Length: 215
Image (cartoon, rainbow, N blue to C red; front, side, top):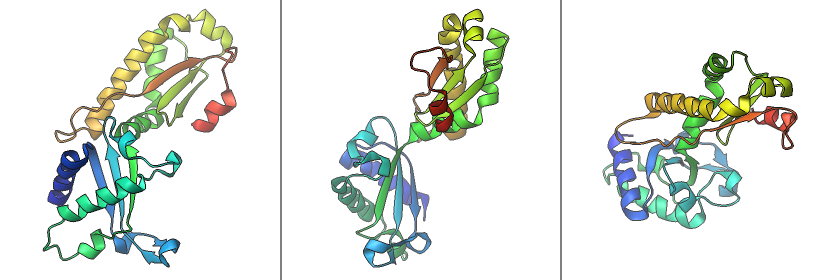
């Protein structure tokens, strides 16, 4: 598949539906799984990675399924079909009226990557300021980081005083990481949506088991 097809499709999605796409991935028919509801035949699968508020415009429910709504799917597939060069010899590999269309927030994908892969950097920043490492650093798919100190350490180190400064510094590093790893001229600005939370077991809403399960 040529890059021009993706470029044309992204432009057409913006023009016709107002949807900003950072990335589009296509699993060809021959590479996809068999779909039982289609009598065990294969169909292509499209994965869309949206920017800004575009996700809310097309996501279907229940959201956990990660698929666009049926109305959006029909319109997206029509735009996809019209973006394909009529002379494309592998059109049956790329298009099917029943193909699935998945959707994910690109910003979530990027900052989740930071949260799970850069905990050592986060700990270094915290230790430089507080002079003591937290008990645990958990990632979450929100995307976010949950930093846990023992209650005594939390109070003695004045974490409540420094947490906003530390959060800003961690988010700044996360933005740099994401821009360098995922950014490009055609994508533009990738908003930092990383949440940074500081906890200790004495907090009313603290749930250590829940934080650990999300990691």
